[in-house]
Amino acid sequence: MSRFALLFALILTSGLAQAEIKTQEISYKGPDGTALVGYYAYDDAIAGKRPGVVVVHEWWGLNDYAKRRARDLAALGYSALAIDMYGEGKNTEHPADAQAFMQAALASAPAAKARFLAGLDLLKAQPQTDPDKLAAIGYCFGGKVVLDMARDGVPLAAVASFHGVLAATTAAKPGAVKAKVLVEHGERDTLVPMASVTTFKEEFDNAGADYRVVIQPKAKHSFTNPDADRLSHAGHGSEKGPDLGYSQVADENSWADMQALFKEVFGQ
Image (cartoon, rainbow, N blue to C red; front, side, top):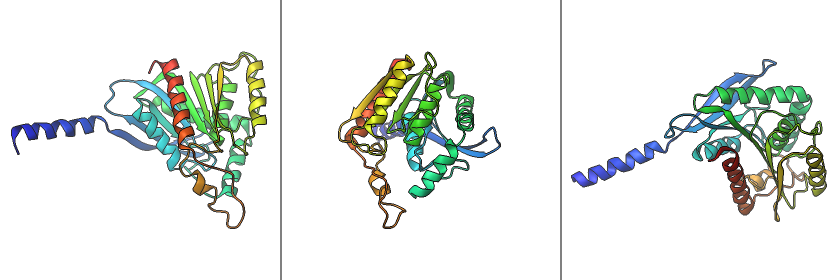
């Protein structure tokens, strides 16, 4: 190999190493002692601390999709943690199980908040995280979780909900919402109908919140998840599954909206 070829190979290898996304599973506990599993991701080519983003999974649980979103955020330069709202990192592809997991997690609003805060504290404890620059994103069930955290005034700079459940456990009070809020909703979402969007807007208007709702044309529930079409038919035999569908256009556009929000609040 010539000296030039060797140098070129070293440059390429060095560049790849610098761009590596580091990931790890971190065991932690909820305030009630429940064993939880977080999936943490960051870019080791970035020096120093950076904004931290919590990722809250869909009703399926902490699956590969939620973990992928943590890696996507890490690639954008964030310190990202996909948290566990069900315990022991459990997940499913069966709608009945997912429904049961979600209902159990939401049975107590204080317990759900405490479990979110345990994940947020874990993210803040990572050496790559700037604890003064925090945000949260959530999908489906996770969208409700992060919106409820905004309603409760949890100190987050921004919150983004993707095809999230919009109904409030407790409606936001005037002045309570500190985060800038982004809601990405599918026009053809039959699981969270447009009437829920209207109610949400009324609630956040009354609360004086800084929010934006984006309706993604022709998109169904779970429009960001490439597995949505498969999952709409998985695990329920001859019964009709949930009305889900992936939309690449809505996925990409909603992700760009999130990036714009983060650039606004974090400057990156």
